[in-house]
Amino acid sequence: MSRINLILQKGAALTRAQWHGAAEAVALRRGAELSFVGFYPPLVKNDLSRIRRFGIDGMLGMFGRRDSADYMRRLGVPLVSVSGGRPFPGIPQVGTDDRAIGAMAAEHLDRPGILSFGFFGLPQNLASRARWAGFAGSLRRRGRKASRFRPERAGGPAGRYPLSRLIPWERGIYAWLEELPKPAAIFCFDDLRAYWIAGACARMGLRVPDEVAILGAGDDAGYVLAVTPHLSSIKLPSAQEGFQAAGLLLDQISGKRAPDRPVFLQPEAVAARPSTDILRVGNAHAAKAIRMIREARGIGISVDDVAARSGCCRKVLERLFRQHLGSTILAEIRKEQIEQVRASLRAGSASIEQIAEDCGYTSLNHLARDFKKRTGTAPGAYRRQFQRL
Image: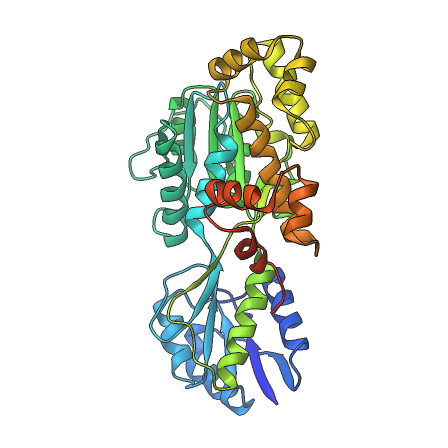
């Protein structure tokens, strides 16, 4: 019998999706058992003694703080840390690639007509810094720049806007939002911060998404659906984090060697909602063509099809795409195809060859090259992140 514990207390607790994933992994292992024992650093001596009495074989939690990591290591049992925080020697970590989250945000928000980009995060948080690096770096490669909110530098417009007194740095947020050239697109570290920005925009009279587009991360319904317009958010593989982490822990308990490096999963996709509906194309033919590509998800249409149905010839439409989108017709078709491939790889059991055919690729090799070029990973490797152990 292998008995593992999920940390429940504030500061080290798994999210509900993560512990659901962990519970599924445990249920699939014969002779494994899951328990829940609380842990609270100020009462560490009592908690450690109580955990030892339970005969725990391994611990699963968020050990991103040095005090939590040190306390847990005193137990002398295998540990796995889930998502975020600083990795510590001897504690394997499973999480989502924060730089990839930032890059996905940049790809989603870099649309025609956007004049400025902003990032609202947590200054001392390592995951926030990594998401900023991925966001700013991806935009830089596209010839764009991003502004990061800095609480220590921000002043505030005195008395100009009502204060909710519910969020920190509120005056500074007002000043920062005022300074960003409009229309602006803001990526927030998580959905809570996106909710704050949406509230600040409402109090300032800034229209979302017409003046400020907002994107969060985590796809937490409690925040993204709590404001109007609803907030777009990057979906994270939280359940898979818990599943992978529990599997690693059970492997260690059975005597297998722990991985030397953190295991990072890729973010799933953007759950697009009205807060980032920022298609602004100043030409009716180009706008009609873009909508057609999106509605078809890039599948079963060619450049000639798009040109014919847009009402102008291919040569003229290509020029309009370069002028208004900074892209080509084929590049936009491929972008939509890749999103459909991602969804198919995550959700279904169809072979990659079948997915290539269903998504309009002429061959598996064609799909593999395009997918690797646009996502940085191979289709098979991407799928394995979302398969059960």
